[in-house]
Length: 456
Image (cartoon, rainbow, N blue to C red):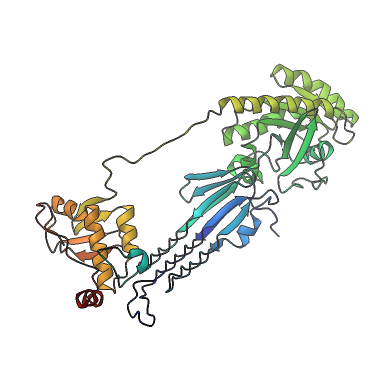
C-alpha cells in the first residue's frame, strides 16, 4: 500500500460568492421605507499551508478534489450573507506548487507558510449598497462571483542540509540512524528504504538535518529503479555525502566505480554541480573493508574529495564526519544569507491604463478586462434594470467611447469575455459616443418613489 507520495495533482474549487438581495423596507406607516437588501457573503478560498506534522502528500493522493463552501446570499433588513470558511490543506515544508504547464507558482518552505491556489468569489452587493442620491431605490442586486477552479501540481522536495547518496545497501539508513534519532527500516536486501528519511544531527553548536535519499542505481536519472522518484529530494540539500560500501561482494563493484556511477547520475539529473561533496567509506568494521578503504582513500583524495573512514555499526569515525558536515552546512548558510538582498517590488498600473481593451475580430468587437468581465458575471440579465446598470458602468469606464473609436456602429456585435463564456449582444449605445453631445440615458429610477415625491 502506498505510504509516501511526493507528487500529486490537486483539483481546487473555490466557493461562489453569495448573491446580493433586492429588498425594500415595508413597515407600518412606511410602505416604501427604502432599499434594505444586504450583501452576499464571500466564497471560501482553497489554501495550502505548511504543517510541520505533515511529511507526505498521501492524503491529497487519495483525495485530490478540494472544494470550499459558497457564501450565503444577503437578506432584507440589511442582513449580509455569511462568509464561507476557507479550506486549508496541510502540506509538508518544501512543497513546490506549479501549474499543469510547469510554471512555478509558489515554493512553500517554513511552518505556517500559506498560498491561495483558488480564490473564492466575492459576494454581490445588495440594493442598499447600490443606492445613491440619483438612484434611490434600485430594484435589483448584483450576483455573487463564481469561485476560481484551478488544477495545480504539488511536488515535494525534501528540505534538508545534507543528502546521503549511494547504492542500495551502502549503509545510508544505518548511518542516519547512528547519527540521529531517526529510526528508518534497515535490512540486508536492496531497496529496503522506499521513502526519504530525515534525521537531525548536532555537531557542537550547529544543528542540521540529514536526508537519506534511496534508490540510486545506474540509470536512475532516466527512471530506472527508484532513483528518479527521489532525486528531486537532493535539490535543496547544500552538502552531498557519498556513502560507499567497502564490504560489497557483488562482482564488478568497488567504491571508486560506485562513486563514478552516482556522480554520473547526479550530473545527468543536473543542477547539483556546485554542491560540496564528502566521501564516507562505510563498513570498515569488516577487516577486508578496512583494507579496501585504505587502498582507495588516496585515489579519492587525489580527486579532491575529503574522505572519512566510518562504521555505522560501531560508530567509528562518525564524530569527525559530523563536524565536517556541520562546517560545510554553516558555510552554505552564511553564503545564502549574504546572497539574500531585501527587495521591494512595486508594480503600479500605468497612468493611462483604462482597465480594458477592445479587440476587433471578424465576428465583431471583443472587450477584455478584469472589471468589465467581473461586472458581467455579477449581472442578472433577467432584470432589465440590472442590465441598464451594467451598460451605465461600462459607459462610465469608457467602453462605449472606445468602441466608437474602434469603428463599432449601432447594431455591431460586441462580446465581453473569452470564447468559452462570453456575453454577446448587439451594441446599442446609450450615449452618442465621440461627440460629447449625448446624455446618459436615465436608469435605476423607481416610479413608485417618484410618485411619492410628486405627491408630497
